[in-house]
Length: 451
Image 1 (cartoon, helix red, strand yellow):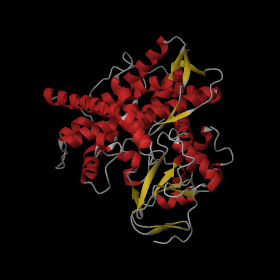
Image 2: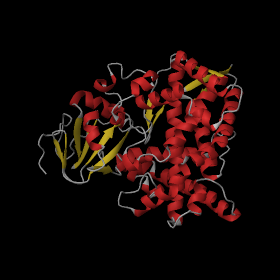
Image 3: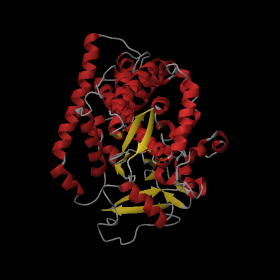
Image 4: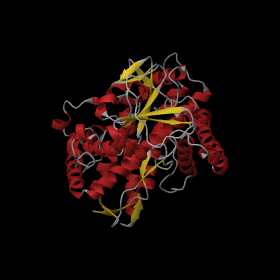
């Protein structure tokens, strides 16, 4: 299908290899963000004959978010996860029947009734986090590790009735294997010559071992539930004992458990870590969160309905996810021949929408779009905002099924921690962001001083 307008490409394109220069395999998404400043809101790389189209403006993204014309595409990095999680909700191809089956089976797990049943567990795990932070006596705490303990325990206990004992064994091999697996998927998904061979030599054996450990852990969780016959109001119970006629086969149940352990842990831990980074940098914002939490909670144990009243806390979370979305973007494929702006796409062609660019677009968000300001999400400022400007949980029917679960968990954690601690950054720390399949602050340590 001929293009009405040629999509720009980076300079220094070379025969056969194409646009191999200028890609940093360690930080490909941040590299892409810089390229938009040079090439405009859309550009295309061609590497060894494979075209990769990147979109970074809200106007073009809005067209790609149209479900009648575009759909989720399982891009190369996600394909690298399929040997681990197969046709789980996150990595299933659009034509695979197990996606719709699992979605139907699991949707009831995220109703208000189910969320209420998870709340007490979230409170208990948050209290364990606070006890862990208190035990550090104000010494700098590796934030990703601490928040990782929280989020892994929450999804493990709420979803599958399993505890990783994270605050007593922070070096649980499951977490290390998970992080390495995501990093492997990210790097092996970059079609740069020689990268794949280098990965095979240095990391493939480790990735195979990591995959085996992750699968063994999940198989053990499922087997223990089946052995005891215990019934719980959680994700695993709904898959083992679905309410309707739709059932999931054993392999898909394993895939879904792994998917939720990855998605339920990895994205929330990174979003929380970025949020606490910004709170440490902006003590005035932290004080507003603290005041709100004190007013809402009082001297009582937080109740389920209290969390929805933490409106300013939610603004902080949204603003952190706007600037540094844990999932930096997502792939979309054209369902038929179509155009995006003045650019033509044939059926099956795909594009990667970089949220890092869309959610910082200065025309949409203002010249200070790179600056942290939770007031952007105040009711008066958010009213009427175009939906394509903020998509940290994805878009359309394939958006994150656990969105409300994650938001409840994060708001409860931030509010509870700030009522008990003052949070300060290490002197001279400059935020550096590392990339696996997600974005996370690198070497971030904060001091949590009991109040």
